Image 1 (cartoon, rainbow, N blue to C red):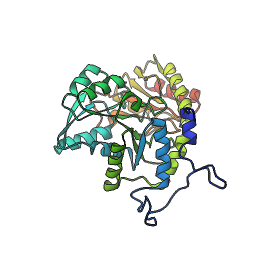
Image 2 (image 1 turned 60 degrees about the horizontal axis):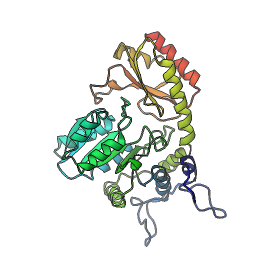
Image 3 (image 1 turned 135 degrees about the vertical axis):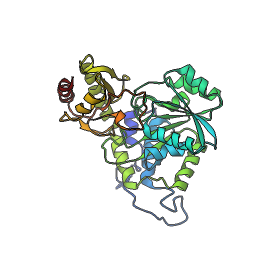
Image 4 (image 1 turned 120 degrees about the vertical axis):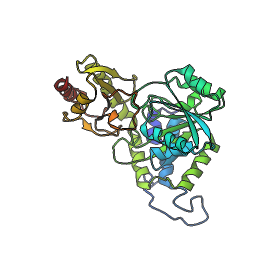
Length: 353
């Protein structure tokens, strides 16, 4: 069979065989216990609903996928691969859950963290000397900084470090880090992959079977397993990711063009792809807090990647890096009509300018 396009893989992977009377979708397998003698045995070790999701996301990323109960559980499983006292290099602008995981492990002496600016390739590579892992996001959350994935990965490998990339914002439709030599790709499937703000789930994809087996072992020992129903929903959402992302990305670009130069804003940040935009209000925290209470369509909420458009001032969270501007508002562009989204936001910006 010829190489399939991502849009086709999203629809066709993880399906039952094309036999008479087979359902088109793997059903929800609500089972804690299986008849002995097979590969499953017990619900903490496997579930056909997980497998269907894993096959599909694995096909899109180009590796073997292991699903978890949440994005943060997936992050924790990757960090659990490190030996005690390992050095981890990470960008200072990262998802607050990742920062919390790293800080907690450093406080207990399990790891040491070297914080870097992920856009400074030379500095990132230099920091990897003696490190066990380079962990980064691209684009970063919420600063939307973009790393040179191939260059920092090659540099980290030259120093003997593993490389893990959080690909939640870009999704495998906009970048496939494994193709650049990355060892582990992490997703919060809660976000764009599932796309409907109705579940919490995570995943890790790797091209190395031994690492995948180690992640499965961590999942089984720690019990950070997804529910069968959430895996079913996540796969259903993943089927439509190509069309959802295309629409949201087109709207994000239109919104960036509309917002650039607005009197209330000192900066509009957009990496050129994806559905996430960050704007910085010139007046800082006060107008940013006022903004999120003045819209009708945009919803003030902390998550992202759903069909509805959400936004929030990120520094309202104490764990957010103090190098993130007080007035930065992260926008997650949904599937509403772009003219309606722009008009709603511009009206609110005009009011706080």
